[in-house]
Amino acid sequence: MDPSPSNFPILSYVMAKLPSIGPKRPTADDFDIEQPPPHPPQSQEPHFDLAQRMPHLTDPKVVSAMRLAVAEVAQTRSVLKTLGERPDHEIVDTAKMKLAEIEANLSKHHDDEVVLSPLSPDAKEDESVKAAEKEKEEYKALISLDELHEAYEKMLKEAEEKLQRIYEAAVAGDNVAAAAADEEVTNEKGFGVEQEVNEEVVGILHEALGKGVEKIDLSGRMLRLLPEAFGKIRSLIILNLSNNQLQVIPDSIAGLENLEELHLASNILESLPDSIGLLFSLKILDVSGNKLIAVPDSISHCRSLVELDASFNQLSYLPTNIGYELVNLKRLSVSFNKLRSLPSSIGEMKSLRILDLHFNELHGLPRSIGNLTNLEILNLSSNFNDLTELPDRIGDLTNLKELDLSNNQIHELPDTFGRLDNLTKLNLDQNPLVIPPKEVVNGGAEVVKAFMIKRRLDVLMEEERQNMEEEEEQTLTSLLTRSTSWLSGVVSNVSGTVAEYLGGVRKLDPDHYLNQQL
Image (cartoon, rainbow, N blue to C red):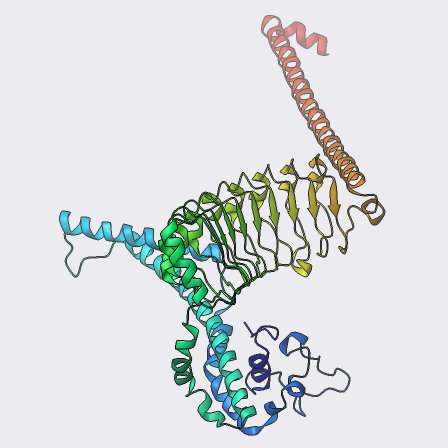
């Protein structure tokens, strides 16, 4: 919700100084000498004193201009604080799907009413329609909240850039109040420079179009623009654009129908075009080391993908349906991102061999992870305080050879852990493990597996013992019940027989019976 000091240092600093946003200072009435107020969280401000590095931040004119520049950000932040955190991407995708279904059903219902029995304006509305309309509004509200959060994230970036321009104007001695207003003019003047195409690239492009080139390597050329005409090189199989300064990949890239490898690592890309989903022959995609906040949903259409590397970006989620489509993927690397969860469809990547998720913010794994029975290497290290447990189905990864769980907050391994027969390399460092204990962990993978197998057997034996005791108790109770019932029946029969006998005697010789009694 609050701007990150590491990503938006100036914005974070300025917003922390705003009275309505920064830490509340206690008044005289609030102060308690026995219980002094707690220090504000360290994350609220940069870990260094930004004013020392940027002394102009103390200039009243600069401060005033910057406060005005972040007014909209502060207002939006206040609204989001009231509405709540951003919903999970998978939940939003489900809401969009449900909304489409409801709208389709309502439309069909309306058409049927018009054709079969049109309702008068005063007719009572169908209860099912009312319920559908209510559900529709709830889904719309959820989607709107997600869109508002997305707009807020873009707003943060634009605000940081504006604050940088204001500060640069202050350093240069220019009018800081006019710095933001001059933004468009500056962009217009610089547009031609940014759009200049490297002459070497133009030459390569012409040569490729004429000769049907299959491989082009333009890595490390300081390129800021890729010409649209590159999409016409249909013979191209490998395109390497790594280590440049590309901010955008043109939609025309969809024309590279035979492309199998696309290397875009170490650029400054903030997004990928949706048209990338039309590269049906693509097998290797490397977009690591960029500024991507999302991978387009259309990536799921690249069903030939074998390797996908999106590490060192700012991804907070993966497309909901990515697992249902990328069934041939063998290596997925999304380390050094901000992933909080994985879509449940990840379990459909049955061909996956390597899954690298280290340095994220994962709160757990979906149960479907157990479906990845061909997985050999799994890296979950350095999710720190967020990752506290593993699902029981981790034991279903029977082909797993290497597992890194270091630098997390896992207290206990699941009882199914002993089923990882092929596991030979295990890292459990920097976890507050209780089960298994430290001395077992120090023994390595085989010792840990043996301990967990014994623990599992002990648990099963204890469960079996309890079940047997319960069965014996139930059997004994049943026997007692039947015995009691049998005795009651016998007594009842005997009593009946005696009564019948005495009754017969009385009828035959009443005087004889009386004499016996006397």
